[in-house]
Amino acid sequence: MSGTARRNPSWNPPGARKGLWWFGDGGVMLLLGAGFIGSSFIDYSDRTERADAVVSDRSRQYDQKCDCRETVLYVDYTADGHGYEGVKLEDGGAGNREGDTVTVAYPPGEPMKVVTADMTEEGPYDFMLYPGAATLAASGAFFTTAVVKARRKHRGG
Image (tube, rainbow, N blue to C red):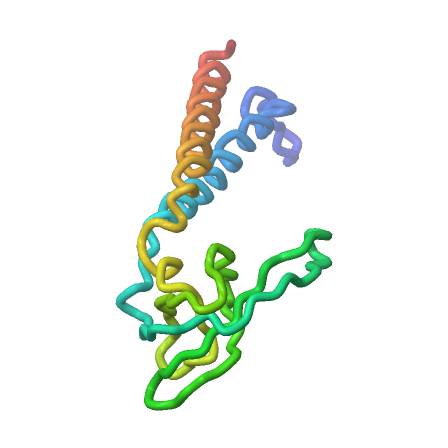
């Protein structure tokens, strides 16, 4: 030997790392799927304050993001001993009319940030179960493909 190490061609053949992306993508999809499914069980009801509010105004405004018109509700309510009038309902609550009574929720100490109480309870994000389940299934397929490719490569096939 002349001092230069010879490389064993079977140790790291060209393209040996090509199959690793199956593991990487499978891992990313696993994390995304778990996040989707986890977000479907969100329940903020125990971390928000509640108040009964009356819808004081209802208007239609143009939304540049979706190039459409959206219904905006404004509510009057009393929270933490103070009266609030004409506060924009952050989640829309489009099914309500002027004069309707709605229960609103807000973060403790921030009574100007109101949403309908339904948005803080478990259930509004149930639709996230479907993409979460599909993403988890796809990650399983990616991991299975990665294992099959690794076994074939290990056997020399």
